[in-house]
Image 1 (cartoon, rainbow, N blue to C red):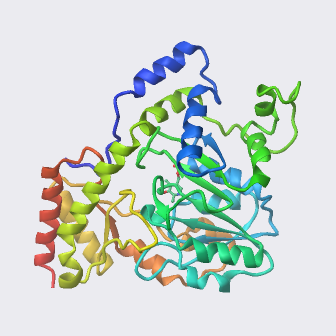
Image 2: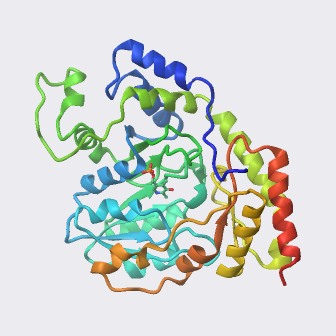
Image 3: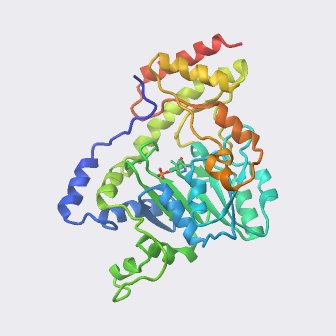
Length: 377
Ligand SMILES: *Cc1c(COP(=O)(O)O)cnc(C)c1O
């Protein structure tokens, strides 16, 4: 069986976990947490990084930090994971869903301005597959209308927009270390704060609404309840695991890009011969080898392709179902037409993609796909 995903272990995970356990400090914000956070600040131009228990949690922190309320509208792409929107719905906000580009799942920036009104408070962008959204234009609109920009950078570690690290451009950003991402800790995430105004409060929200982080640095002599928040910080056991991954990020990224390039080189013939769409990397973006997908000509074609692969013990999957059509959203909202989001919902298929995917197995997957399309008219 060739799985869709297989978590990669660098070898030091259990060693560092043992160190954390033996040190006697296993709650949050210890040495491993600090190391991981500094890694993001030093390498990815983030002003203040805070580890969280998930990307979803980091997004909830964003929602609290911008003081999102029921009077606010938040613009979110429809073709994304649930929590890109849910984090703001929990604070009572209304979500205004935006469509994808015709040729890429990323948000169609050219349509954004028409969605902005006097209630709009923030734009959430998702760098799908680690490919950058056109951030200059997003930031220009945010400036013009005085909005916050939150980057859902769950898939975007170690990827860049015009040389700037993704997750360092918006006012706030969220990363994920879920086991399906490039760098993992089982469950895990990180809040990136890039605007000074949010730094102090982010630490308080992170530490259950208290100024405990400041207390531990000796800045104040007692700590107490000063704001909203929750327990968003992971234990040192998680941070120790994550550190073993981050130490090896170059090796991991290099291999993933090789796998990506091999898929692209061997499947690109199908773009012209069979009209399928492969991931496009705009000039302004790098590729972090997060995932490889193809967009079929129809839902029926995709269903048959997934079945054909399954018959050879290969697990390819589709994922996001347009959020503007979700049961939960439609309970309280009018339906809207977002044809491109629906197109990716129906036709996008993700191929097996993980560090330890062997060349032989990758070749088997590619051969079956090429063969499948030989029989398609
Ligand atoms: C994975 C993912 C999330 C959720 O990350 P968790 O760490 O599982 O909470 C959110 N948004 C996007 C775009 C994702 O890919």
